[in-house]
Length: 283
Image (cartoon, rainbow, N blue to C red):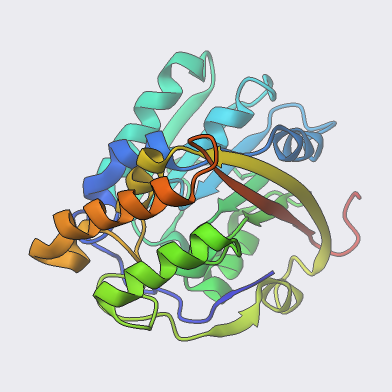
């Protein structure tokens, strides 16, 4: 599970990257496969009052998926650098919260500290966001605050940029014709190629006992939904195109409609979950 090697150690401002797209993020980003949700819930078997720490929570996909399955959950900490994302995450959790308490922390993941004693996380999750973080520092923070039997789950399934299909290749080429060959990343810069794998990060941390779980996922996209998804990404967000964004979206819609079969575009992905524990802990 190799991912980018340039962690974002500085806090990204609320408006700099994904903040303005919180509503679109909640609508267009794919959720977690059900099998992955049940795998996460199973890690808490025997834990009487699980505490979830969700790093890079975005609009709260992980806790929203877990809460109905893990009814014993006592507390949730939501961590993100974007205040508008956290607002959306908390609002989305409210109908599911019940007696479970929820705190939000705006800031870089490695700077997190529980707001109150007695809330050591028993499950720490990070979905599609670990590459943005100062990864060794995040794992050190997790070791300081986590319960002895805690599980760290690093999850992801790539993106439409990395997915290999005729339609994604054509879409990637169109983006490059507007923005250049290099993949854009962050607020100003490009993706520099793979660095250390997440497995290497975990091997050098306190959570060095790692198991990998891979779940095939098939999705279908409407062309218009792909455009909505692109607006939430760091490689094709509207600000990168400036006044050319309407032209890009018109060209992208034509391309996607031409590539669609029966009005839909197919994506076959693999959702990978790395479960990491301290050596000698429960399996």
